[in-house]
Length: 219
Image 1 (cartoon, rainbow, N blue to C red):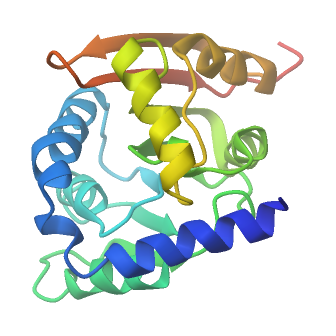
Image 2: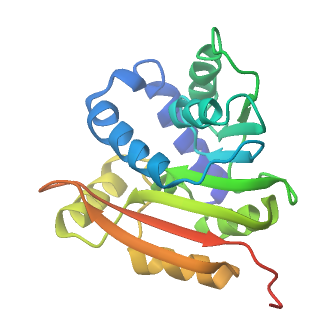
């Protein structure tokens, strides 16, 4: 199946889910918890430009914008039109003006040396061409900029079973990876200071978090 066709399926699935997405049990009990863990690890400094890949309804995007205190710029990017619409509705009454939500696929974005930080939370298993996404992120980052990926992983039996069920029954679920495969994506793209770990949240849920820094490839 072509990348464009697969991404169309992903967009349609999330268009259908968008209206009640924030109130769903998985989002409230799992995704917001893991996103909060990620935000605790981020080094957010005034004036930073930040890109949130697969931003969904924009919860993490707005949290980062608030931490920046109106400085810098935060771009939330998602390929679902309805999810972006839900995110934009949250801008009403938001105290800062440093947020933009953009309808676009992560594998087709076209930024050059623009962001200090790129992150993706709970979305990596929906990306069709993960290698292409890494290449695009590399281009989008400034030198010494950081990339962080957090997602479910295939390093645990129950998570691997969930991945299999998702790929069989949900077209938006392209597939998750192991933490080792994630680390290799960072390294093969050229990232330095690569770190990757798994974290067990309870008897069922487990995640991986990977980070890397853009350095000159000749260095």
